[in-house]
Image (cartoon, rainbow, N blue to C red; front, side, top):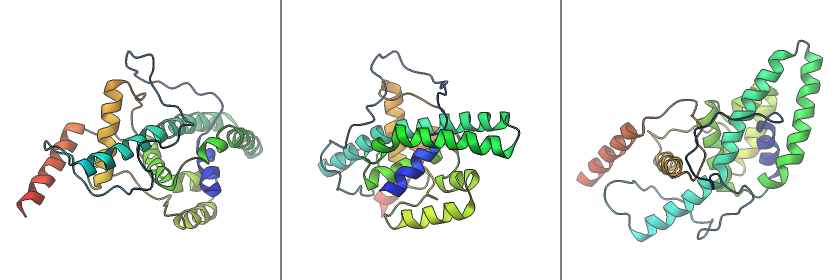
Length: 226
């Protein structure tokens, strides 16, 4: 997983950007970044389940809890990536020469490797897949394109090819209206924001959760009729 560690460290950009968030009145918000998956077994794959008004069966509940734990673990990294990307772009915009930008970027990259590499190495393959989706949710750009824009097209191609060997596509997008798992992730995030479990950060492309929920309720009804 070292390749994905380097890639994700690369995305957590700039030294000390301050986020503009809307936290709840709760003194224990956020998530401990160094915590491992501890709910049940991380090797269980999430099946295609749909949350509706009906109660989930025990197996579906178990799988949902596993997904919830993974989202809690990696969302703070995606949120931080969006903050750092904004800070890096602002910093780069103030520099005039390519040499200044290259030097600045190198300093940032070295700092982030030292700061986050150990933490990101602890992520599982499934957590890495979810993180890639959430980075797209928060920045509006795939991890592949972020690397392509900041490094080079060839670097992005090599990184994505290597990632595919571990079943992690850096081109993966967040599509809650199309992918059932992404809908479940959005459900988990909405609940976590409302309870103060996670800090809220506006996604790159705002999602109307009411519309999303109705969409999947319709999908569930259509499946039940078959």
